[in-house]
Amino acid sequence: MGVACQPLISGVNKLVGASDQVREYGADLIPKRSRRGWAPHGVRLAYLRLASGIGLAPLRIPVSLFVLTGAAWALMLHHAITMSASMDSAGRGAMGVDLIGAGFTLGGLGVFLAVWTVMMGGMMLPSAAPMILTFAAAQARRGRNVAGPTWIFIAAYILVWSYSGLVVYVHLHAGKDLVYHFGWFQNGAWARLALGVTLTLAGLYQFTPLKRLCLHRCRSPLAFLKEHWRDGSADAAEMGLWHGLYCLGCCWALMGVMLAAAGTMSIAWMLAMTLVVFAEKALPHGTHISAAVALGLIALGLLVGIGAVQLVG
Image (tube, rainbow, N blue to C red; front, side, top):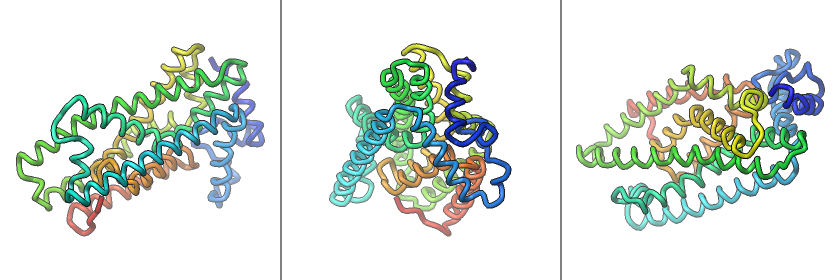
């Protein structure tokens, strides 16, 4: 497996300069001589990490990813504007009701999963791009068909997030029923406390071994390919599923923050979470960024819990 990926590793090392500068594409490694004043060097290396994958992969792959991500964001923006108009006409809370429906139905589930899948595609594909492009580059350097296995990899990756939408839909309905049953909807203090606890728990999750493991796997495309590489379309799907699971383990708490703070169709919160996830996975010092995000979430959770800060979706 390592021998199969060796040409790809060599190609990446040549693009970034030399093998002593980059020991593993996507890993959390910065040259020692750039530790001081790492900001400009960090930005340059972040660019090289992505550019190396783009340079080795056929141009149609990054272009297709860009178009797909842009289309997903356009659809989300259109949907958010439509739902915002519905909320203005029907009163506050209409957005949540329109999105998950008044009752649990298969039709409502289908609509929700469609919206959820588009949203996850728009939010997660930018941070998954280094892994996808590295996978495509590995296919290209082995002289194999690139488009087929790469899109199978992407589809399997998105499928993991689609299935997570089923869990979200069930929990949203259960939570809505619980809130209305006990009359917590009218209790602003309870809602504030619940949001504060959610933010705090999401921050604490950032320090867990599972988060660190999943983040490391997401930040290390070559290490992932060395471990999971197999030939064939079915194996591309399996690798996409594995990467999706690592990504889900890395980011589910941040998605929970977005849901709790503003609902699923807040463009501002979606953009914020997209930037946070991208920074953790693709920028240098991702573990430090993750820790900073954790401390910020914990502090914000405490402030929201005591009523010092009010978040508006």
